[in-house]
Length: 170
Image 1 (spheres, rainbow, N blue to C red):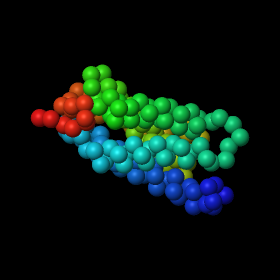
Image 2: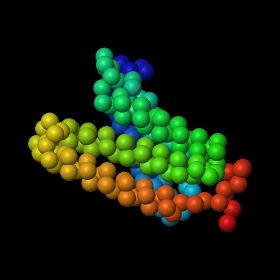
Image 3: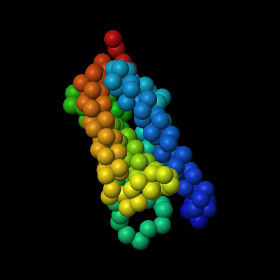
């Protein structure tokens, strides 16, 4: 039991949060590229992605493993993105800090989803049973390249005119 839920039920909650984080994160990323602040999507993305990382630490483990490291990096990136957006209102360098850290958090969530897909989906697992085979490496490299490209595009295009109260001005 984890937080009063069976491991299967808790896993379902964790996976649901992760998928919501990915879906809302894609919307936020498209908003960055289109120079649009999508406040509601952003709030959902940040909340569900923080919740995904936090719930990941609640699974029983006796040692620090790569999943924990990814979770710690994600939480650090999310903390910076949240501060940049809600405290610093994207002023000056905080705009770039927000974009980089939001995209990094989304990438890490997708990275873990790809890892899980190769572990859990039989046809993918057959292609890369240890996670060290070329199909897995190529997939992760393509995902990384896509996020680097889209993140750079978002950083270049996202220039909201925001006052100290957080409202956008033309």
